[in-house]
Image (cartoon, rainbow, N blue to C red):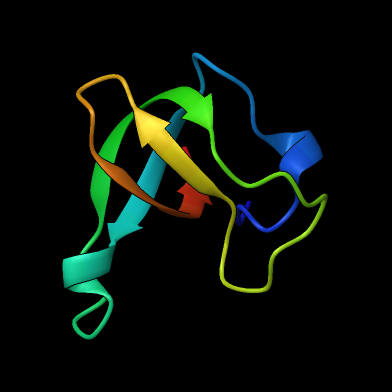
Length: 63
């Protein structure tokens, strides 16, 4: 499942995100959601989240 809808994402969920520095390559980083940073219910490039290790990126896939 992709991470374009905020309703599908919650703290504790394991996801793959794309960091800002990796947007060109599409390299994914896996981790567990700590905070949801996007307030809109939908975002075309993925909902922005902060992982438990502090990294911030847009959800590419829900694992």
